[in-house]
Length: 156
Ligand SMILES: [Zn+2]
Image (cartoon, rainbow, N blue to C red; front, side, top):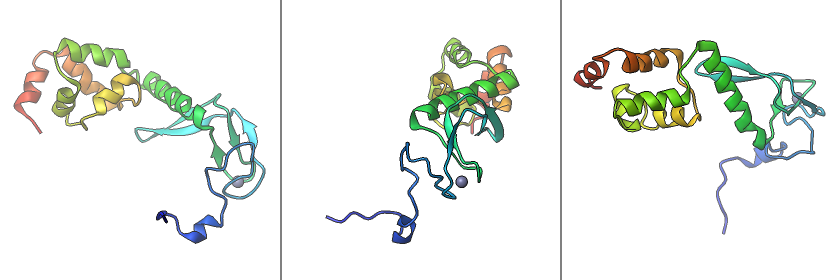
């Protein structure tokens, strides 16, 4: 049985991205990539965060980098931590604590703040990090009496 693939046959002529190490040929320009732990740039909430110390392959000719699958999570967790530190944001546990104290489900708090249903869940699990402006809203919910009532009176 033939299965349709999204890529056209001409794309197949180029080396595919999924090709694994120790094949260290750059998928963009063909140069030999080398191991590096130099800082890598990760976009977080519209900001480029430089994360040092994550092992990866870097191309000496173009800007291409290749991160091992096992290190991708570490790269993102480190980027979230740097972003959180830079903006002085609430920690994941603090978000959970303020929500529980207000007796809200993750979905309910997300709805009140007009966020996607799973956003609070991701913040509390550390799988994403709130923006600086969303952090202000979370602090208002936590610290300013009447904020929740105001949000409930002005639903999306
Ligand atoms: Zn290259």
